[in-house]
Amino acid sequence: MPSFLGIRTALALVVAVIAAGVSLLLNGDVQASLVILVCAVAAVLIAASGTEAPSVPERAGLEPGKEPAIADVIEAIAEPLLVIAGSRVEAANHGARELLGQHVLGEDVRVAIRHPAAAERLTGADDGAPGAPIHLVGLGARDQRWEMRVRTLGDGRRVVHLVDRTGSYAAERMRVDFVANASHELRTPLASLLGYVETLREDAGDDPGTRARFLKIVFGEAQRMQRLIEDLISLSRIEAEKYRVPIQAVDLADLIEEVTIELSGSPRAADLVTQIGDVAPVAGDPTQLSQLLHNVIGNAMKYGREATPVTVSLQPEGEAMVRLTVADEGEGIPPQHLPRLTERFYRVDSGRSRSLGGTGLGLAIVKHIVERHRGRLDIASSVGKGTTVSILLPVQRVS
Image 1 (cartoon, rainbow, N blue to C red):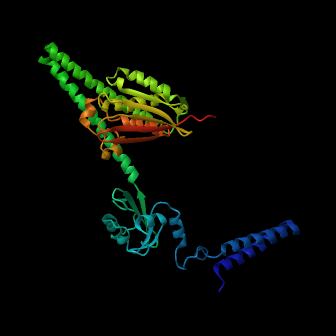
Image 2 (image 1 turned 180 degrees about the vertical axis):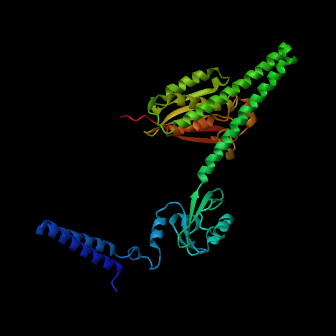
Image 3 (image 1 turned 60 degrees about the vertical axis):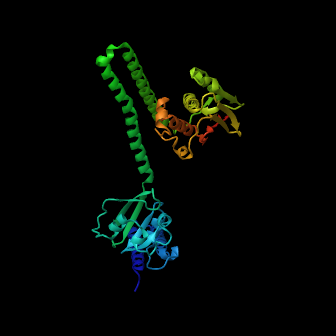
């Protein structure tokens, strides 16, 4: 019996002949009719040869009866994707095999995806509706979070799509923590302000000594709130500009001199030691780099021991970078705290930090400034010996 494709080809040839004949009857132009006939036949034969090419399984080298179209499509998707037939994994792309293991093909889906919520969804009754996504915690790694979506195909098989939500969850946690910490940091001095103002309104305001002492505390708490708000605004501004690489040439040696002069009123100003080498200007934002220097040098002066040097060094690092180093000889920082020092509001010693006027945002601001300048920040510390902050910044390119 001729194939369906052969019948279509024969019918197309008949239509081509009829079209040429009609053209001959209407126009009487034999050459034009022949051109129409030849072109039509050629088009039909080309179409037939294209559609009668080897089947997809033969081209892909797959066994007959498989579904190569689905296999090809899911393999082109980066996120983990599986095809479930009954309760078995029929196909799994590279992402799924990397996440769940190379052995998942042919396994029971409850063994392939070892998670109670996934097993309950995939073994329950299926009404064909997509349903709400299932959130899987701890699949792959303990801190990973995945979103599982299941879609039923027309033949009863199901496609399982896993989307990694670890990054978005971490970002959301950071946002929630930031709002909670900022609210707490603002609420604490505000409560103190309200309490002292309320006291001053009563009998305590009649005593000049008490009034002066309370007003000094109120002024200090107001300054603390002001510093915190200024740091929050700075951090927000730096984050908004992080994709715009600064290109202005900045002489860090001159900037360090300006900052040390501004810090000359500090009780530890006499302990500052500068070691400035011959370095090229860096590509940067002078305002942000000044803020970076104030934060890093200010921290070293605050947390270093009395009468010990705070050394500020600026030296070339190859031809493309300069290295800024600020070292103190303070108490040092235990190693478990080092990875978290640049987190917002993270403090090694909260009481000491607040008593010294710290907002908990200084090193977070430094980290974002360094990232915007496409540099690198390293913090090394030894308990009992001190802390060294090293910053690499790219030099201004000569066009």
